Amino acid sequence: MNNNVINISFMNEKLLDTLYSNPKKVAEYMNENPYDSKWLKQLLDETPFEPRKQKITDFDLKLASDGKYKNVELENAISLYEHIKDLPRYILVDNRFWLWLEFGKFYRVALQAMPLTTDTRLEYSWLFKEGKRGIWRNTFARGYFWVEFTVDESRKDIYELTKFVFEKTERIRNLTFDNKYRSVVLNTIRAEKDIYDKYISDPNYKETMEKCEKGIETYNIYTFIRKSLSLYGSARILDFMDDKDLYDVIYEKLDKAVQEVHNGNIEYLKK
Image (tube, rainbow, N blue to C red):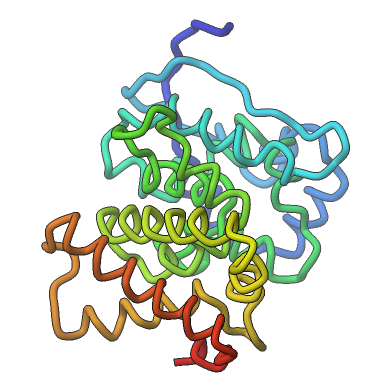
C-alpha cells in the first residue's frame, strides 16, 4: 500500500493553450507515445505541471489486463473518490487538475480509458472543450462524480448504488449530464434500484423490467425519468425537496412506467 503524500498539480496554462491550438499534432504525439507523456516538454520548454499546496496520499489506478477499461472502471472511480474527495470543490471542478491526472499521473491508464478513436475525442473527452460540462465526457472526472453522487452512508455497502450505476451507466449518465444536484441524483438512483430489484426478481415482471431498460428507439425508463424530472422540476425546486418526498415522487413515476410497459404500452416511455 502506498502511503506517500504528494502535492497535487495543475497543468501549465501555456501548455493547455498549446494543446487547444494543436489538437491534431497532440493526437499524433499521443498515438506515437502510449506509455508516457514526456513528449509534452517538446511542445513547451517549461514544466508541464505546476504543484499546488494541497496534498493527497499517493495512489495508482489500474490498467485492464485484457484492454477493456470497463473491467476496471468502477474500481478506479472508487479509488479516485477515496483519495481526492477531501480536496476543495474549486479544485475538483477545475479542468487543469484533471488534465494533470490524465496527461501526467495516469497517462497510460487515461489512454486506455479514452482511446483516440474519433477525431473529436481528444478535444471533448481530454481537453474539456465544453468547459465544466466537459467533466461528464472525461472518464476520470465523470467516474469520480458518479461515485460522489451515489455514495450512500445509510447502506451497509456504501457503494451499493455506485455499483448499480456502473453496471449500466444509462442509469446515471443523463441525470448528471443535465447537471442535477446530488440530492436529486441520489434519490433518483435509490428509486431506480428499488424498482429494478422489485421487478427483475419477479417471474411475472422480469421480462417487463428488461423491456423497460432496453426501451424503444432511443427511449427507455432512464430517459423517461430524466424527462419526467425536468418537467416536474419546472414547477418546483427539486433541490430543496425533502429526500423522502423526492424519492416517493420518483418511485411513483418509475412504477407507473413499469406498469404501463407491462400492460403493453411501451410507447409510454417516450412521454
